[in-house]
Image (cartoon, rainbow, N blue to C red; front, side, top):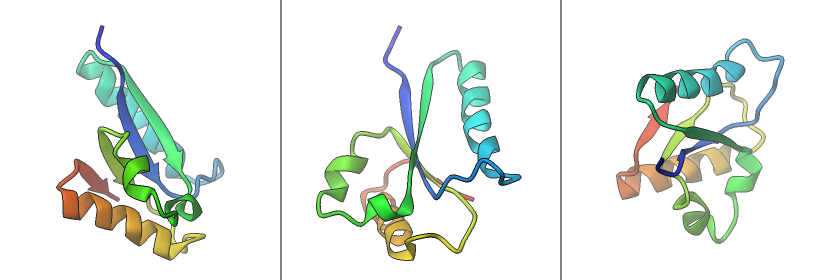
Length: 94
């Protein structure tokens, strides 16, 4: 079997949120339907304000910007989105 598809999720995860836990569930649901393995990894917005951001995000097959502003780091969220858009990386924003 091939390696798992890695999806990086930009956002400040809160398990009490009515929507954020559903993101990982939707990724797993799609992976099951497509008969592949998927790994969803949360990337807190504050972790996206680093000099080597490109190197960090290149490890993911796709990226997802989660809802729930205000973010802990609005700049971090924008940097993650900018990476995806400038590189035409597979990206979803909700």
